[in-house]
Amino acid sequence: MIVNFEKVSGNTGTFSWTVDNMKNPPSTIPSGSFSGIVVTDSNRLYHIAKYDKQTSGVTNKLPANILLHDIRQDLKEPEARTQYRLLFTPTNEMPNDGSIQVTWPTQITLDSTSSCSVMTFNNFNSGTYCVINTASNTILIEGVFRGQEGFRKEITITISNVVNPDTNKPGGGFTIQTYADD
Image (tube, rainbow, N blue to C red; front, top):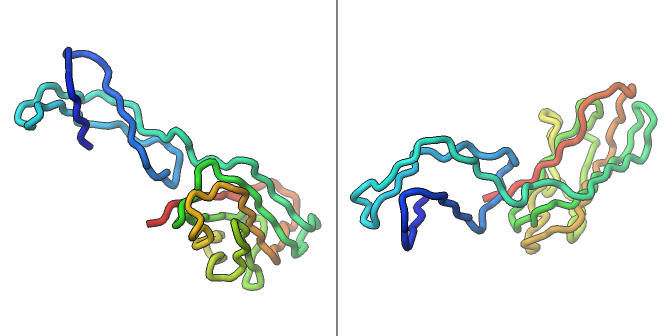
């Protein structure tokens, strides 16, 4: 990255800048420190200053948190086949090429009879849009924001034919991650 300064009136001070139109990373963990910061003349012939100390990491103003989340389970009996509905609203707008990955806890079971659907601006209930991977305990949701650049409304993921845990022992929960795909 190159930052140009119109006028520098001293050799001390604080430099800061913003970068517009950045995509959110798949994680909200701050990046590492900038390193090797060098200030040169406009022709890049002479080094005016060099900064090697640790700097603040890069963070987004709007981390990819989820707002207004809810989980609804039709049947709560142990080992019952039931339906789960995950409802959430993303903080950031979902891009046209955005995708969602859901990881389910190991206490529940999805198998070849399980299915899923997604409601965004339309109901997407084909395996093309919502793919269940029982080997990795994940559901990959793609193509449900096409034509809806900037989608930031409630999203409902319905997972059908799920087997409830056999006991009420504590364990993990659902994880939802949103991505901007290239």
